[in-house]
Every structure is written in C-alpha cells, then in structure tokens.
Amino acid sequence: MSLERAYDPEWFRAEGHRLVDLLADYLHEAQAGTSLPVLAWQDPERAWDRCRVSVARPDVQELWQETLEQAIHLHHPGYIGHQINPCVPVAALAGLVSDLLNNGMGVYEMGVPGTAMERLILRETCQRLGLPESADGFLTSGGTLANLTALVGMRQMAIERYPDSDPQQFTLLVSDQAHYCVERAARTMGWGPGGVVKIPTDARFCMRTPLLGPAADEAQAAGRQVVGVVGSACSTSTGSFDDLDAIAQFCRERNLWFHVDGAHGAGLAFSPQYRDRLKGVQHADSLILDFHKMLMMPAIISAVIFREGDHGYRTFFDDAHYLWSSPEEQQWYNLAQRTFECTKSMMALKVFSVLKVFGPELFAEHVDRLMEHAEEFARIVDAHPLFELATWPQANIVCFRFRPAGDTERPLDELQARIREKIVRGSKFYIVQTRLRDETWLRVTVGNAFTSRKDFQRLLVELVSQAERVGAES
Ligand SMILES: *Cc1c(COP(=O)(O)O)cnc(C)c1O
Image 1 (tube, rainbow, N blue to C red):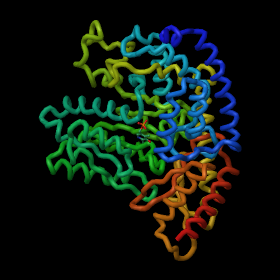
Image 2 (cartoon, protein in one colour; image 1 turned 90 degrees about the vertical axis):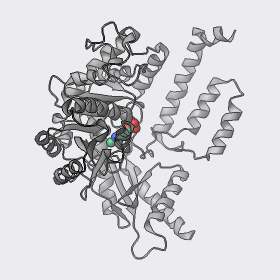
Image 3 (cartoon, helix red, strand yellow; image 1 turned 60 degrees about the horizontal axis):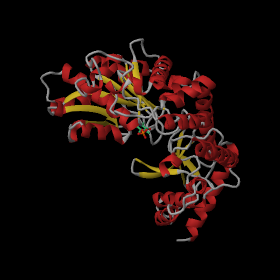
Image 4 (cartoon, helix red, strand yellow; image 1 turned 30 degrees about the horizontal axis):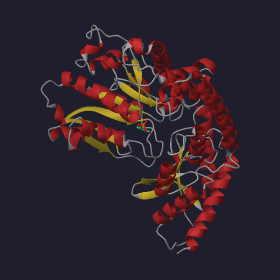
C-alpha cells in the first residue's frame, strides 16, 4: 500500500504546509546570519555516515531539517564564494510546481505552458541584449551544456562555410581566462590539442585582442581552419569583460563566428546602469547566459541564443525524426529540435514567475546591488594595508590576497590557502580561492544582495585574525 500513500494528496498537503513553514523560518534565520553558520563544515566521511544512519528513519521532516543543517546557506550574508546566487523564493515555489507537474518539455504537448513562457523569456532577453529581430534561442541545463550546444551549432555552420576543410582540424580562439568548458567542448567535438588557441590577457585579465590576427595566421599556417572566436563576458576567475566590439570587428574582417560566453555577465543586459560593459554583444553570432549566476534563479537555467534563430534549428537537424511529425519544419514549440536534452525540466516557469510578479526591473535591481557591493568591497580591500587587489573588479567578482608587510615565513600562496581553509571551517564566511598567473588569490563573488559593508569589514577582521593563527602555527 506504499504507492497509495506515496501519492496521497492529503499526505502532500500536510507535509507540504509543514515544509513551507520550515523553509520560511529557515529563510529568516539564514538571512539574519546571526545564529546559523554559513556552512557547518564536516568531513566527507562524516557526511556519509550521517546519510547512512538517516536513511533508516522514515521521517521526511527530519530529513529536510537535517538537509538544511548540513547544506551551505546561500541566503546567509557570509556567503560570498562561488557564482551561484541565493534563489529568489518565488522561483523555489515555481520549482515545486514544475517538479510536481513533471512536464518533459521535449515535444510541445509535454510542456505547453512552459514552452510559451520560454519563448517570451528568450524574446525579452534578446531584446535586452540589443540583438536583431532574427535572434532566437531556448533554455537548457547549465552554461557548460549551453556553450557546447552553441559551439556545435557553430561547427555545423563552419562545415557549410568551409566545405573543403576537415572538421577535426577546426580551431577556436579564446582568451587564456576562458572557462574550461569551452576547451572541453572543442575536445568533445574531436578537435584535438590544436582545437583551442589561447590568447594572452592584459593586466585586467581581458583578452589582448590585437594578438588575434597573428594567432589566427599561425594556426592557419599550421594547417588548422580557424572558425571562430569566443569572447568572455565575463571571465570566471576575475570577472573580466573581453572587448566584444574588437572581437566582433575581427570576426567580421575574417568571416569568423563570434560566440560570447556570457554565462556569468550577460545578465548585465537587464541593468541600464551596467549594460555598457557588454558593448559589442549585439554583434554575437551566438551567446549564452546563466540565470543562476547573477539573476537569482535556482541552478540550473541557461539560455542559448543564436543571432539567426534559424541556426539553432540546423544544429541537430538530422536527428530523432520519431519525435516530430514534420522534422524539416522549424517548430518553435518543439524545443528538443534545438536542445541537446530530450527531456528537460520546465525551468521557464521559474524565470517567468519573476518576470510576471516583479518585472524585469527586479533583475536590474539585483545586478546593480551586486555590482555596487562588489565595488565597495574592492574599495575596502584596496584601502587596507594588509591586502592587495588582483585587479579592480569589472563584475561582482573580486580577487585579492593577504600581503603582510616585510618578509613572511610562508610562501604567499600557501598563506592564502591556509587562511581560506580556516575561514571556511570557521563557518562565519564562505569564500573561495583561484589561481591567477600561477599565484593563489582569495576570491569573493558578491552573489548575495544582502551582504553589505559591515559584513565586508568583518570579513577582513576575520581574515587578519586567521592569518595570525596561521602564522602562530609555523
Ligand atoms: C559558470 C560559467 C560557465 C559554466 O556554467 P555552468 O552553469 O556552471 O555549467 C561557463 N562559462 C563561464 C564564463 C562561467 O562563469
């Protein structure tokens, strides 16, 4: 009789009400940031032991409570680590609806409302990005898959553009700060070690675009067919924006595909104040955007956009005819014609809920707040005698490090790593680290709009005191 009980609407009602109360209380506590640790650190074996004990007790509320206790709390003001931002609660409620409905989205009938919402979201996004009427796209599961999808589309066009070239000899130009998934995509497509050429970056970690020409010539001379350039908007480690206008012009001159990896930063298009950081994005042949990076959405919701919407249909044209009555026809409402996924979640409902309830201005407000707070953090770091910035932030990502006066016993790199470990285990703040030009730097992404000046000041105090502890341990 378990099945009947498992699907009993009254079980759902009772447990659901309790769950919403639990989560609302949790949100109060997490956002206040006073009683809850940002992350109650435990080693993996301990987490595994707890999980094995827990599974034997059939109490769902206990499970949810335990999950809350062990998770990292993105709504806590001390959460300023990775790029994923705290989920806006209306999107979490939408997630409950979309999970229960479980509409599979691949073909029209399996996701009627979500399919229409997806179209509206893409239109709104294309318009904000300044793309022409011909632009169109769809949602997919994450920036990694979104980049791969766009680049497979690019490859398809390149096969038509360079009919005499061997597709395994195709090459992409990217900055040395591009996300690793771009290189992975090239490798997945079988382009081998020469499939990606990395263009060096300047002091602000932006692509040195004058080097594109010589790099392209060199690759061509080595027998490769250069097919496109990827601009980062922005890069993952430091949040640096490549000069998209310059890349667009280079691509125009050489008749190359221009792809923009806007996973992190393309959300700036919603902000009248900051959208000029994306200058040139309107020339992209394809681009991607993660709604879970700066736009408050739960992971993972990404957009893939083609300047000529038609290119999105040509990517996978010859597959899976059994799904559609007339596969040669471009049907905007049969999304799996264009996505890697067959089944995908009705992710559009989450974005659409925000657009409907709060309007696109909420995205602007959020982006502006994060950008302003990141600048404020950078100013505080810059003014502090014991810290230095890697570069002035261009997005909501700030890289910096502890740099005591005079000689230190420990190499600076090791010092940063040790400090970070203590910060994470101290459970008041969550920050990360990154490697920049073979040096270790601390890294903060101001992804929580409610992390403010006093939190930043407390973080620096905490960092200094942990640094002293590290020093005492030597
Ligand atoms: C985060 C990120 C990605 C990967 O996106 P996922 O959604 O994590 O798969 C790709 N490119 C850039 C620039 C990113 O910041």
